[in-house]
Every structure is written in C-alpha cells, then in structure tokens.
Image (cartoon, rainbow, N blue to C red; front, top):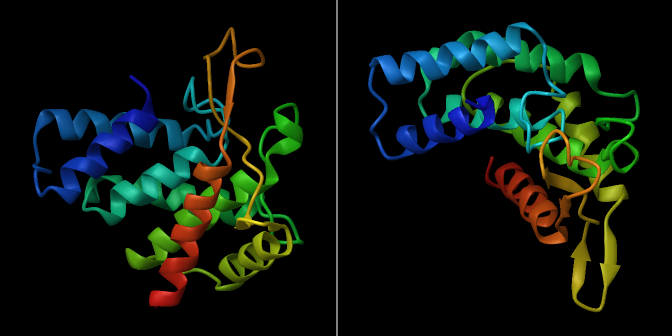
Length: 185
C-alpha cells in the first residue's frame, strides 16, 4: 500500500480519536517509517509525484496523534532542512513541471508548521524563507491573489507524464492553510 494513503488514514484516525495501538496502526507506521528511512521521497506515492508530499502527510498524521511516526518525522525534518535552497524554496522533480517549486515549497512549509506545532524544534528560517518565497511568487487577477497550480496527482507510474492534474485551487488552499497557521500563532 502507498505510504501517503497510509499517512492520510492515520491522520483521519487521529483526528477522529480512533487511533489505537493495534496491528493495523503498527503496520501502517512501520511502512511509512521504512519509506522515510530509505529516503524514498520522490517515489513514495505512485500517484503523488511531488517529493514533498510524503513529509507533508507524515507531519499531518503525527500532529494528529500518530505518535508511532516519531522516527519518520525526524527523517522528514532532516530532509526538509537539507533540501531547502538558499533562496528558501524547495525543488521537486526537475522533469515534472520544471521542479514544481511553488507546490513543493507549499507542501514543505505546511509540513514544517505541523512539525513545529507537534513540538519538534528547528530553525525558524526554514519557515520564514519559504513564506517569503511564496509571497514573492503570488499572482494577482481580478479575482484576487493566487498561485499557479502545479502537478499534485498523476495517472501513476506508466502514465505519469501523460495524465497529470494541476489545480490552482489546491495550491491556493495549501498555501492559505499555512498562512492561516502562522497568523494564529
């Protein structure tokens, strides 16, 4: 099974207070930890091509109560700290939509904010530089501020370059959620 789907399930179970120490929870957590230990960021999700989608969902699941993912969060945080550029953005797969810098940075920022909320300690510059990058790359229209949607879902391994879903709305919602978290702090 897909680690991104498993993390989403753990998030749901955590939010609904159904996360118990059972074999299903344990197996899902072990699989996610294994993927993080192996640093399989770019290929973690067959249908989720962004290299920062796994840290995003792991951080969300951990913040929601999936404490079994403690080890995975440390790998995610290390990856997020080491892969950020000097300019504050994150670069996805170079062959996919020119690296998906906006969506990669949005996923990474959201993950960092969830990890911070869950109690992990790291440099605030990771968050601040990502915010600056996203704000500097916003677009304006008659309808308001938005960010150009990048590839958030594909047709899978064989069809990854043929069937792709882009969504300005998905990207905007992800960034708006992160900005809202910062305002609430």
